[in-house]
Length: 502
Image (cartoon, rainbow, N blue to C red; front, side, top):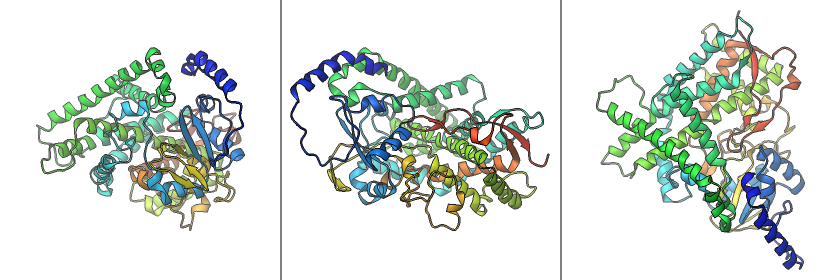
């Protein structure tokens, strides 16, 4: 908003000039409908100020339809809000819609597109995705991380248990985030930071800076002629300082791993992702061509993507607290299967169909990355009868798609039963449910994400009975969201746990 205000004077002058010069009627267009645009800035004044753009765009789609055209400065923007059109973009015409826009913050974060997430669709992307799928996130590799997941979830349950005898209120949002951070640090680079310690604070600061860089407004992205404003305002310098701090963080991790490789590791130790990447780099027979910058960019990808799991866990617990009968049914399923074992382990998960239904229904209503990552068209195409030009930015609004009334019956209601005895594919092949995307750009960490969410929710529901704080009723529990890349619950989920069986 501050940057937009800093542009006020030149923009006003240009607007008056354009309004004075352009008086003839607009030419007929084959572009999709959309909200009115201001000269020069287009719809930046609308999207640049909202804290929950997926919800804002969802409401706009009710007026303008499931395919909308907007303008972000000089960049044309296409917003997709239906399952039918999502299938066109993510599957049928995926090749035309599968690139990424060249945004300054994301370029700096990804070492100039050396990663998987922000790289345009090209040979480098295909090589990086293949390497990630085979070496970092294969089924075998995901299973190898099981001890870390189960250890950290057990630690989380122990921490929550200390609140139970006292009937204390618990900030479940913070607890879930802390458990996820411990998991991802163990999986990605084999460390566990002390809660409240300086290293943990540093890591949390880096997470915040990720979000800033991914979602920051840089004038040069949308109004290249005014790109100097980014430098004058100090925006570029601030981004460079953040990236320098991140680079130092990655380098320290790499140096520690290089040093530890000189000492023979115990056979039972889990090989973390950084171990694997360093081994690939040092493998002379490998054709990956991996560099230190690629390794750092991939570390960023893995850490950034991990934010979806605690977010989805909290949305699921929120939905369950608002639907006590669903909570009761889920607890019965889990407790009947697990009995007095004391925990839900990963072998139990395939035997819990209602758990999967609950999580799918939560992901439908509250996808953790509601606009997915923005795409960019590679070629001109025809979509729903409209001409879409190359270099068009594309938002697929998974939040709106999950509420598409043409695809879902009672789309705004939380009804997990719709997924029981159903052939709906939750892994990107049914386009009414696309929390991890689909097609060439589907999230490579989807399997890891699902198993983490299922394990966290199952153990929370199995081990505790949950109540709202005194004076709070289920209908009062808000579902306000905040965030552009990952949509967190705006207000922390505060609950009172009681240990099961106590």
